[in-house]
Length: 409
Image (cartoon, rainbow, N blue to C red):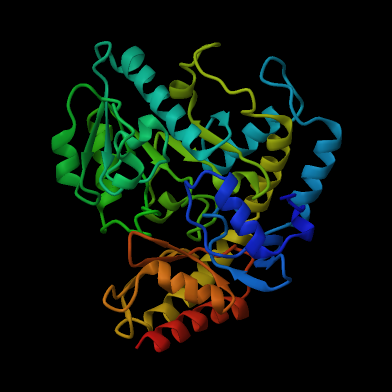
């Protein structure tokens, strides 16, 4: 049968086609999005939905943000890619801006979030051998249980998510996993060969899990006392999501390396980076790490605009202010089908009573009410709307969840 182009196809036809020709590594909700504007997405039938996922925080600035789109269109007409075989006129400017934004000296540009994680791992190991003096082949990195840093073969080697891990071995050695939030366990796991502690300040995929008071300060103290790098994976939590430029600002802590991504590409192109000081990132020499697309002119132009938007502080303030409203409204649902909520800025983990419904079922009902959200870990629903969402839209999304819970009870 001849396949019609998307503009001529129905949503059911496109879903059926996807099931036949696209590898099933995702389980999307039954909606086919065709366009987006701000915090609103529109499907192929013209039905509008509130976006309460923001592409897992990649679309922090909403869809079709005019400054981001203009920057991309302008750069696309000039130069999109050179590879790193040559200098180009956008990368150094972007790197300097990004470094200043988070208080670091040097940037290693990549594309996807997991590339930033893999890059951070390589940098930490090389630093450990060349600077700390760890014996070759003995470096270890400590991670937290419940982590999500991506799904490459190295990263799933230290994941405890069996869906991402099972049947993908043999697994990469060199990692030790300890309970998230337990500073004593972390301290006991460190030895003379530990080169880094890799953590999400707030665990996103685990359900927006916020660490106990004092934990991250203890992590910083422990790593410094043991001459060990602290690598903060702020790929989801960073760039305005929590009401700060990076989540660690809430705790007054500065890591050795930031891993950034998702929102860094403005929701239009993959851009990620490892950001740190020269004494760590400066250990890399030509040929030791690279990416054909990493630091490309198009991504650097878009990333520069993203940094400029964040430099005003507007989006961080919006996330902080609206986050208070979100927390207040969601808290009223506890005991009415919700067991607990965790909120930091415009980022919330909502634990649905598993005796009532799975998170997937709730998200399917939210879809029917015009709200797009995503479940995680069985009965938890995540809310992470674009930072451009307004108060009325935010309240409408919470009202939809309240309506779903009322129907369940």
